Amino acid sequence: MADRWYPMGVPSFSRLAHEVPEPGMLVAHDRALYRVIVVHEDHPANWAEKDRNRLVQNRRAVEERKRHRARPLPREVFYPSPLDGWDGSEETWPNRPRGVELQPMAGGKRLHAGWPHPGWAYWYPVDEHHPVCASCGEPFPCREVDAAKEAARQMVKVEKLMAVGPSCCWHCGEPITSRQGARTFPGENLLLPGGPSPSFHQRKTGGCLYAAKEYEKKWREANPDLAETADLFGPADA
Ligand SMILES: [Zn+2]
Ligand SMILES: [Zn+2]
Image 1 (cartoon, rainbow, N blue to C red):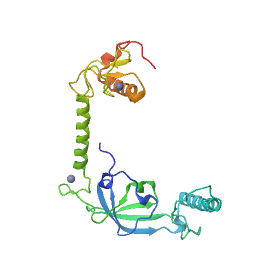
Image 2: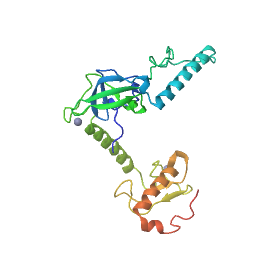
Image 3: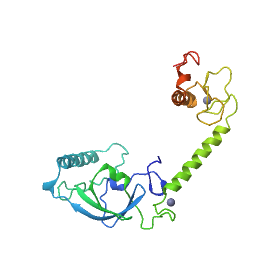
Image 4: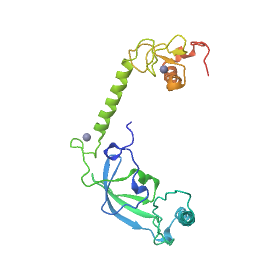
């Protein structure tokens, strides 16, 4: 399956992992858009045990930060924290538990989600003008765009493999000299259908040995009969 979805296809973490979503905000997650409708406050009396524990930890962190700031290491840089300036009280605690209601833009039932939660790292606030695919309606990049990119990547891989010369290593593409150790896997080429039986250098530099071991796993699965033949390659090196 395709990789994780990111707005504009650029891997990143969302600031919502640390900042409370705001009502009215447009957020994107896993190829869908949502509107933040309301953010509920939970009364401290209803806070869960884990929230109480977080409160204690956060208070401790603030104290430690203050102590540390008073005596910084030479040239130490302090990055801002959402806890900076917090007086330690429950009501103003920046990380106090909230309930967030989200309306899927494509319609359907509202979703309820607790905040904070590590999962928010993958819910991205997006601009009101975030591009949406004219063909399928998904926020950019849509599945088709991702599939086309993946196909282009595969094409580049195939072209590289087709360029591997005879008696060259199928990992690094360099010639295998008679002095170098190499391993050839008989039978069908599992990297390039129709290609010759591939050989790999037995050296760790450049990752050839690792590539050979990875190939061997696939090769054993594809050739259970061949794999049972002992000493096919002579003594294996560690
Ligand atoms: Zn599309
Ligand atoms: Zn190699």
